[in-house]
Image (cartoon, rainbow, N blue to C red; front, side, top):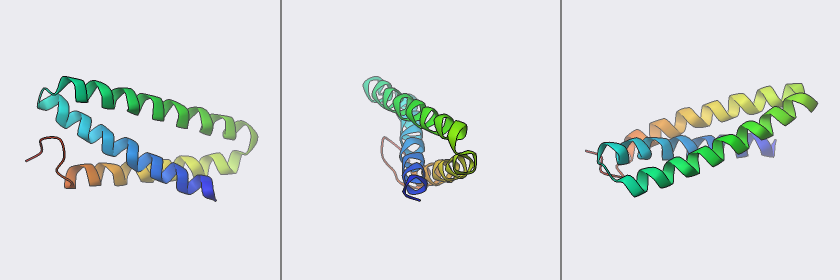
Length: 89
């Protein structure tokens, strides 16, 4: 159960950072765009690795984790669009 919450929160963080990264790119804030892209890549690869390992050992739990992560991604997009950080209008 704790992993579901972790994947949800990580999904929120990852896509929130992704939305900020797009704003940084549009505003030509190169260092911030590069930094957030690096963090997003590390997070997503760690999550995918963790979920794929679970899919090999605990099929039902891996699917639930994927859904929780996807819900987190959707919430992160919403928050990234609503919270004006990184040069939003």
